[in-house]
Amino acid sequence: MAWQRTAREDFACPPSALWAVVGDPRRWPEWCDAVGPVVMTEPVRVGAQLRYEPAGRVSGALHRRTAPPMRVTDCRPERRLTIEQPIPTGAMTVEWLIDPTTTAGGEPGCVLAQRIAVGGLLSPAVVVGVAAGLASSWSRSVVRLHALLA
Image (cartoon, rainbow, N blue to C red; front, side, top):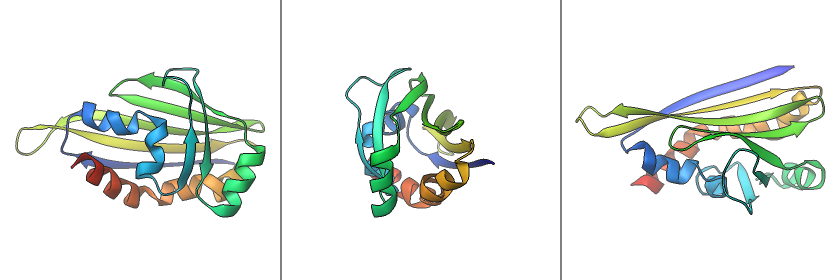
């Protein structure tokens, strides 16, 4: 089973301001209520590893006991951050893309896109346990991001 969801939001701030929040996985729980604790002890760069827990009590406990670390697979400051969670015969990928724009008032702005993709034998379980929660939290996440950037 292959599963994917993409969502977008406009922001009235320069890409650097949005990147300061979205480009640091340790800050993910600040703006996404589907994510619990994130531990990352190295700089954000390709190959860096991190551990996170889904915010749900059951999914968080299961994830903590069974999931290997995520890793950064793409990092282009102020443009793109991609992290990947290995699952048997596949992966869950979470990607944030920042595209510079100009607001209606002529100020710097940007569009943030979030793409979540899951593939592999256990993808149905990963979608139910983690990915669907990340995707469905988007509307609350962007409200929190706008507040953090205000």
